[in-house]
Image (cartoon, rainbow, N blue to C red; front, top):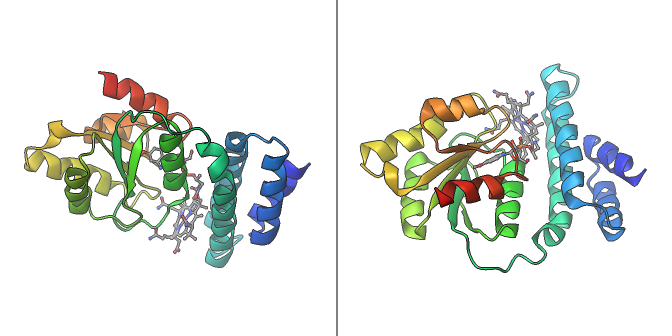
Length: 210
Ligand code: B1M
């Protein structure tokens, strides 16, 4: 019941209600990953309603903020016990022109929970900056998130610049975000497509072993 109420509160963009319901759910033993999965479905619905002009930018923003509040509440529960030996360094960001960060932030959490060290470039990150920061951080992996068809080409741009600079072999490249696909990853020459945050640590583990 609280689960459904939480989904409704996030969809309605009610931050306070979302916060207290999320707190209640995790304190009652609710699975944080299941909560995130359900809320990702809610955000998909929000996106569809936005595309159909049933709701507008302010409503989409409020729902996004409510989801971010819930992610904050869930963070310590997702990260619990994540102090093992580092499995690798990931430089992560949302690509240029793209301000969507909720999914990327969840990926960061899941990677940290899976014993990866993550440096987060935030949103609207320039491709050249991805590479510069990856060098400085000593990254093994560059992870680029894109939530819009219009910003997906910047994932490719990172790879193209690496190739131009003769540095492509230094990093494994992982891409993700709702409009991206395994076919897109192959087309642009990425090493990995991660469909969701939950599978990212395992898929990355497999990739780094190769
Ligand atoms: Co915007 N938005 N938005 N938005 N927004 C979408 C993406 C859209 C699909 C909605 C729609 O029209 N149906 C559409 C894009 C259409 C397109 O492709 N061209 C859209 C649009 C058009 C826009 C604006 C242009 C609207 C406007 O201004 N007129 C504008 C653009 C701003 C910009 O970026 N320059 C805009 C703005 C916003 C808000 C600011 C209001 C807000 C973002 C708030 C924030 O992030 N702080 C927002 C939101 C909330 C959405 C939707 C509704 C939800 C996104 C989300 O957070 N989902 C979205 C609709 C949708 O995606 N279905 C939509 C939940 C999240 C957990 O899922 O991000 O997919 P997701 O992440 C998943 C996986 O994809 C994966 O793991 C995550 C967890 O499992 N993953 C990775 C993500 N990154 C990964 C990286 C990896 C691996 C896995 O490795 C590196």
